[in-house]
Amino acid sequence: MKSTSLKFAAQRGVALLTALMILALAALLAYALMQQGTVALDRAAGAQRAAQARALADGLFDYALIALFRDSEAGQTDSRAEEWAKPLPPLPVPQGLVTGKMEDLNGRINLNGFAGDSNQVAATQKLLTRLLEILKLNPQIAGRIQDAIDVDDSNIAGGEDVDFMSRRPASRAPNRPLQHFSELRYLPGLSAEDYATLSRYVCTIDIKAKLNINTAEIPVLMSLDPGISEDLAKKLWRDGQANYVTTSDFVLETARSGGPPNLPSVEPFLGVASTDFIAHTRIKLDGVEYRYSAQLDRKLYKVIWRMQGE
Image: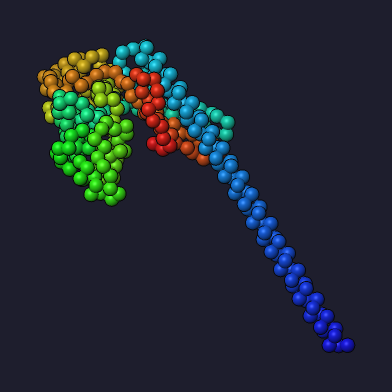
């Protein structure tokens, strides 16, 4: 009898242990299912939030185009004193805030000038070479960029197909006007640091676009002529509020301030109005920040490209 009781007790112990194991496994399975459900809900909420951010960004870019179009109807010049140049103050939206700002691309040296006629190519080469020297970068980068953009196969400084193919990953030279400076990330001889320094002062817009002296930064103004010193450029810059009505006014003030009497090689490519801008927006929804950028062409009244990031 005693051995039978022990046997039954052992069997009950095994059954209890098995039941506990089954209960533990069921609890783990239920927890895993709950976790999967939570992850799925979080993913759905994240996707919905990202879609809302994109829609808000698109709306802001459309608004910016309208503002630029109205500005062009109000005057024939563009400067940082105008409304488009003022950052958009934080704008409340459901569950978040939206801010924005615009930059004038015409205030930068247009690398697509290398795809223009011989005079424009020469002017672009002079401007870019001087800018590189001012920024203490390798002046040969100008020749490599020219190689990459111009349509011929003449290798000036190492920016043709053979040079791009030697890189990893291998690629080909664009040999065409660029839509964005980032297309030159793999340009031979252009480091990540060089790229970051240079990208502030160059653009890739319509070949015939002119450099707006009202919105050009100090290094760009210095690149117009070796006779424009940093001090003179700061004076011409007018604390970022330059507003010349004509390029002749700019040339005259340059001469009166002790600079070169004229700028014959680059003046035909200078202007006081702008056609291309970059709009940046930061959108914060439920504590998550999204950043978007877009190039706006006021002349064509369209968005040329848009991307997430700045």
